[in-house]
Length: 446
Ligand code: HEM
Image (tube, rainbow, N blue to C red; front, top):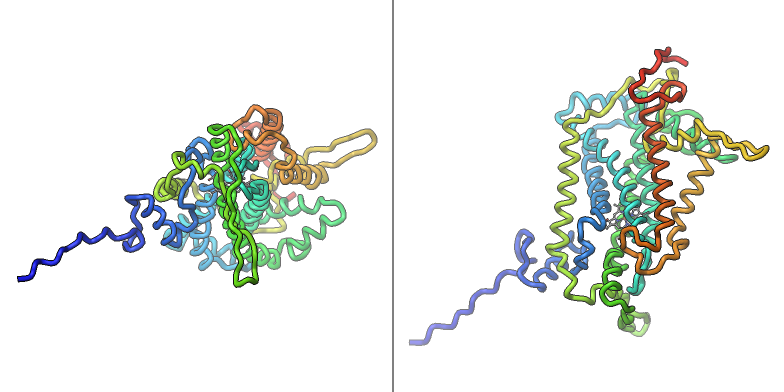
C-alpha cells in the first residue's frame, strides 16, 4: 500500500480573490494587494502617515466636499430624467418632481441641500488649509502643494458657479430674480461688464437662451470640469507625499532635513530616457509612523462619506425646497436678493460709495470688480507671498504665521458678517431691519 500523499493546508484566498473586498487584511502584504487589485482603492496610496488621519487636523472637510459632490451627481441623475429645460415647461416639470413623482420632493431636497452645504464646506476646507499653512511644501521631493492651492481656488469658483447655474433652473420668481441680481453684479465690470452679462445670458434679458446656457453648464461643463480637477487635486496630494501634516511631523521628530531619495534613470528601447517619477516623501520613510491605507484610511473615508450622505438625507426629510410663483419679469420682488453666497457682494454693491479726495468709487465697481478682484488675486498668489518657515506647514496657528492668520480671519469675519446682514437684515429697498422687526407692506409691482 502506498503511503497517503501529504496534504498541505490550502492557502487563505488573497484579498483580490474574494468576491467582496475584505475590510480586515491580515498582513501588510494583503493590505497592499487590496489597493493594487481593486479599481476604486487605486485612488489611495498603499501606506499613509498616521498623524495626518487625525480628525482634528483636517476635520476631513475635503473628503466631505468630495462626498457632497458625489451626492450631487447621484441625486442629479434622476432629476436630469425629469426636468425639462424650456421656459414654458421648466417650472411645471419641477412642480411635478416636487408634488407628483414618488419621492421626487426628497431627491430634489437632497440635491438642493447638498449644493448649499457644498459651498459652505468647500469654503471651510479652504479656511482650514490656510490656517494650517497646508499649501506649503516640506522636505519631500517634487512637492508642489502651492499648485494644489491654486487648483483649489479654481474649484471653489466652479463650485459657486455650479450652484449659481442650478439656481435658475426651477424658473420661479426666486430663481429668476436671484440670477438677475447676480448677473447685474457681473455687469458692473467697467467696459466689458455688459458684454460679460450678455455672454452669460445669451442676450440682454433672462430668457430661453439663458436657461439652456445655464442648463448645459450645470449638467455638463461645470460638473465635468470640477470632476477632472478633483481627480488632479487627489493625484497631487499623493505626489506631494500626503498631507502637509506628514512633513511637519517628520521635521518635528527628526529635526533635520531628510536626505534626497534615489531616483533611478531609465531608457525605453534606447529612445526615451529619463528619471523615474519616484517621489520620495520623506515622511513615508518612517515606517513606525505609517499605517496601511486598507483599512485605516479607507474606513475613515467610508465613515465621512456615509456620515455626509446620512446628514443630508435626514435634513432633506425636514427642510422643504422652496418653489415660488412662476418667473415673471414684470413683477420685481422687493428686496430682490442674489443667492446667499453672493450677498456679501450685493451688500457692498448696493450700499457702499467710497470717496477718496475728489474721486468717488461707486458700490457696483467696488463690490463687483475691485474687491473680488483683489481678494481673488491675493488668495491665488498667497503661497508665494507667505514666507513663513517650513515648520509652519501642516500646523494649526503656527506662531510664525500669526499676522497673516489674523488678517485672513478678519477678512473671513467681514465676509460672514456681510452675508448674515444681507440674508437676515435687509428688507424692501435694501433698508436695514433687525430680524425681529416687521417689514412695511409694499405693493409688489415697483
Ligand atoms: C470641490 C472642492 C474640493 C474638494 C472636493 C477637495 C478635496 C480635498 C481632499 C479630499 C483633501 C484631503 C484632505 C481633507 O480631506 O481635508 C484635500 C486637501 C487639500 N486641498 Fe482640497 N478640495 C477642494 C477644494 C479646495 C480648495 C478651495 C482649496 C484651497 C484654495 C484646496 C486646497 C487643498 C490643499 C492645499 C490640500 C492639501 C492639504 C494638506 O496637505 O493638509 N482644496 N482637498
